[in-house]
Length: 201
Image (cartoon, rainbow, N blue to C red):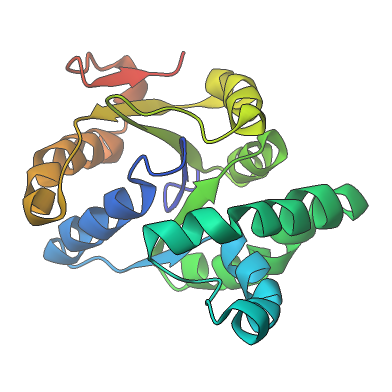
């Protein structure tokens, strides 16, 4: 198993990037390096110019209202056009740099695993899949719900955590440290987890 590759899946706004950001601190405290990748970063790069030119909005915006406004374009370009031409287009776009980071000893997190073939690719590389779920969270659309049902049987760990506001971000840390401590345990799949963490099998 390539223990340095972790795919994060879950509904939009469930805290996947937050899980990585707090994991990065956890790993750094252990003297370990980590990197974040996202399939959508390549997609956003392809759409960024047209959005800036015509809407004055970056595809990488962190503004919630702007995100909701441009989401249909990103979904259409990424899923309805690019993935229909080549379902592995986004995987192929980031596989080489991920391999390089892992080879250098870094832990790599992919923070936007949304499709079954992405999960299957990560697992074929020996990686694990963490599903991140926020209490009260719901799918952004039907496609997200349908894909989550396909991914669920392939999930290794499901993490359920409460809603955290921006000034409460440190409250995520006990969840992250508990999960990662179990992750580093070689007998991880035989452990009994607390109620906010359940195995996908």
